[in-house]
Length: 259
Image: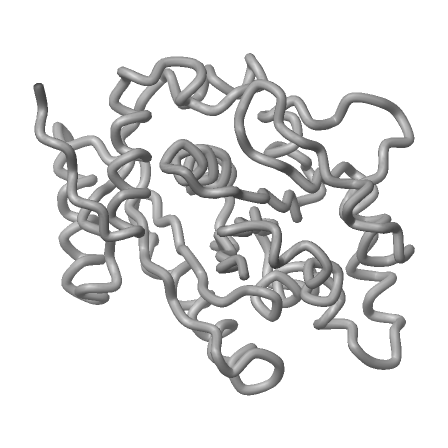
């Protein structure tokens, strides 16, 4: 049965989609079968893995709100070894449709994923930058939450608000939800700001913060334009090495010694 991890932070621009794509790919390259669920109406994860191939293509919206079979909506990776349940702008109206439901509005994604959960080792959910019903659905479906935090001032504000939402979901719809970890992103060791923010987050949250952080790396920004993860684009760059190390840290796999 798959472990379901929601990648969430209501602040935009913190590296959620970059992490969703490249962590999914890293886990796959380590021998795991991975499904990436694009749950953001911007559809950046879908675009970044070249998963939206035709007009009228079924998406996660059709699956959760129109009972479309999830098996028929999943796109099997061609360039990157990750399956993806895509999203597009139609998901922008999902909150309003969900809100009209009398019951079960927080459980829609969880129910939709159930038929394929046994087929994967990991299901990664790329959450929207908000704290609405879409995000609540993702947290209700998930076993744990990975929180990307950009190395900038006010970083802790976003984390604090998300933690309040996580506690609410634990009380109302998913008591077993846990924090997978906090990931420092866009880290630049040459700047005092990155170092200070990283130290503050580590002081506040201790062992919840991953030892590995994700550096600023232009290759990570370039890869989506080719419809691939960083591992198909440039496996030797700093970004690829960072996500590979993060996946190993999550799986508690020792780093291989350099040749």
